[in-house]
Image (cartoon, rainbow, N blue to C red; front, side, top):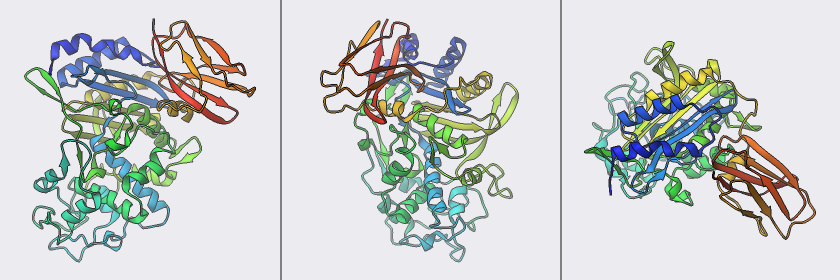
Length: 480
């Protein structure tokens, strides 16, 4: 079934009340909804971080119009080409480990040679892959065959790369797979070069690329809802569908994948992207974990090829936006896939990052511009980085002999009960969707009542600890 646009517009506003935005604004909501309507975006999720904390987080519309499933701050969506940033981070981690140099020939590391026809004596380097100067061309006649329109890719990354780049590969085409230019001399945006970057991570690390990212990026930086494959999500209801728009109707698109996935298949939500942006703005650190050194972070945001393209760093690039103060260049990345539009950009001077993800065919850049202006007016409250206890609570965990929480939904009193509770003191923490701790309570009794009558209606998360151990997390719904 398809849903008519006017029906969606009428009830769109009923969903954004279910998140706790630290700086809500009815006028900003109205502006964003108007853009969603004009740009044909059925669902949108937004976040602004500043000085190490979330200062805005709001979601609108539907994750799936057929199911009328709301798009929330914890709904994941394909990031499209923003994925390339994470591929670049993974590669830079191996660079920091001393496993290669940026100007090394990639053929010294691959199981097959990648050579540019007519320029075989000129090596392709890691830096060229990361700056779109490798002379690798996107041949969509071949790349379209790497798509699976009903789920995860069915071809491995290794097979995909061999088919495309090896002279004996079934998709090798010296005229269509490569530009007729010397590597390192011409800027040509290349998805397949980014896919090859991910494959190099796989080859050099000895781990499947998705598992490397899980272990070295997503898990240590509390990005529990960020994954490359649908099979890695325990519940696909938490993943928004892309959407098409035809004859004044939205049409959900089935989840799809592609074998050259390091260039665009990553799925995430704004809660996780907030942690990533905070980490980047804190020179690569988050809760005493180091993603990359400050030197590597700086190099990714530094012009690498000024004589060829003045806006290109290592994976990140500078884009022009129109804001209230005039045009401004921001470092970041955007993304677009069938039924997907995404933006993630940084203003280092104001220590601010903005992400917008939308499940429609058009670019949501106008929403980013509105949030940039609004973000400049906001001041952090001082609560600091979201903690990993809160982030872990997005994925509920239950310990043996766990607590019973009731009523849930609640509107006045919520009870945490565990008849098997020992005399150890337990700390109960209730947080909003930004990670802000709203209520903290201590108990060593089997039954603890907590007054929640002052909390606004919405979704919250609870965590229960004993000493330094996290023993249980979950969701708490507050109704009127």
